[in-house]
Image 1 (tube, one colour):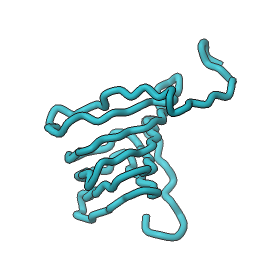
Image 2 (tube, one colour):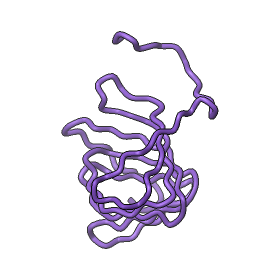
Image 3 (cartoon, helix red, strand yellow):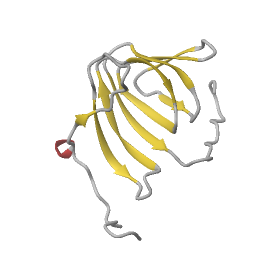
Image 4 (cartoon, one colour):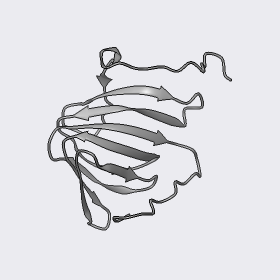
Length: 132
């Protein structure tokens, strides 16, 4: 176990969350959102947290795998093939490393996210009902 790591179970209460300004890309003109990183691996390859933003419209190319659970609001993602995907409360949005598209909030969005940044690692596709 690394120095500073703990095996103690922790609970983060809503009042303990400290929101910080979310990263904005240089080409973005929309107001910044907020995020909270709840956990990060020591090697910085995995992170997990919360994100909220009223407006976001931008092209993206994922340099990492992201899995997001939409808590509030709706987002529209148009992939490079022109397919439009809408995700809202209760939906899980998977954007694999290398995916490209255009992200647009249809309303203020709050999500829980997990990011995995291992070089050369893939994630297994969802196999079950629904499209993927």
